[in-house]
Amino acid sequence: MYPIVDVMKRYLSVILILASCWVKAQEVKIIDAKDRSPVAFATISFGNGLGTFADEDGHFTFSAKKYPDIDTLYISALGYSEKAVLIPRATPTQTVELEPEIAQLAEVIVSAPKKGKFRVRRQKAETHKDIFACWLPTVESEIAVLFKRHEGQVSQISKLYLPVNAESEYKTKGKGKFATIFRVQFYENNNGSPGAGIPYENVVFAMDEKADKVFELDLLSNSIFIPESGLFVSIQVLGYADKEGKLVETKKYREIKTARGIQKISTSFRPLLPFVKGEADQRTFVRRIFFNDKKWQVFDRNYNPNSKLLQIGHRNYGMGAEFRVFED
Image (cartoon, rainbow, N blue to C red; front, side, top):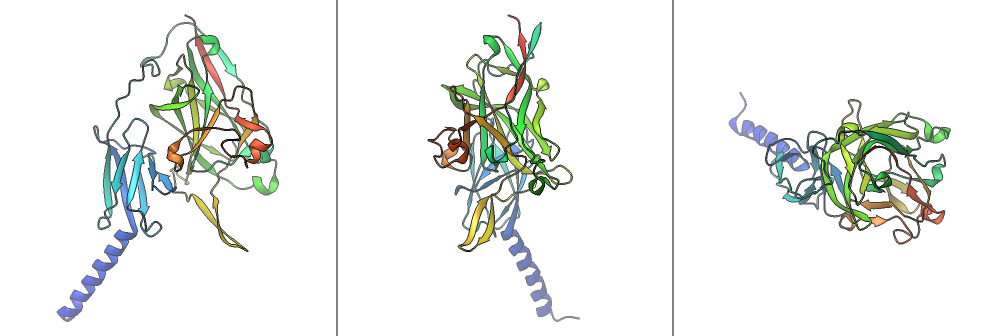
């Protein structure tokens, strides 16, 4: 028999160990406040330029050990009001409810597919194989491209053509398997720049090392119709996928040892996104979702005068599309 004092000490030790684990990591689940369903791939900002995404089930893990100075999370998703959430240090789990936003989207969202005769028209994707003229996708970046109605007629986007470069022609860089999860989102055209987000169903997909040149994304079942003013379509990196295809938590920065000390390098993902020579009618916008209040900026010298892409004149992401163009 152990003395009661020893027993109490053992129990106290277990409690302290559990408490320390709770402090180090907290499981957070994000749900719809109305129907209690998971909010997939919600954006979680830590308010200091750092952030991450929830997975398809609305889960993510917050590490107090990694972010000891963070006590508030800012959680957002298209179609919901953003919510600031305090991190209770004493509990290992927390459920966050997001309130759906009621938006007047006028003609932007078509509730039922257009019927009748249509013609199939295509806007060719523009691409190349020069890895030095490619955008390095990072978890904080989003690229949006403007699409207009084909010849002013009612147009549905049935496919997207996404230029990619898997680096397969460069042996030292093209080796190894990967699976990167991307998200496509849609925005109103606000006087030539991306405006309010349009809360269509999540369009999330994965690319692997076999995706090269142009990736075709089928959107026919999503009923994406272009309004008279046009529509911005964006592509955004969520992170790498595990063997089961689930989103894994990705660090925003990699820490590299150099002669000058530890340097933080933005974590980039494959495949790369080729940018092409700029057009007179600039239609590519970019933003860093954890910086600058998520503001969109046209991709020109005002965005970053030191950008190598801009210095060589590669200002546009040449996203293409297939349209169903309906007769009046």
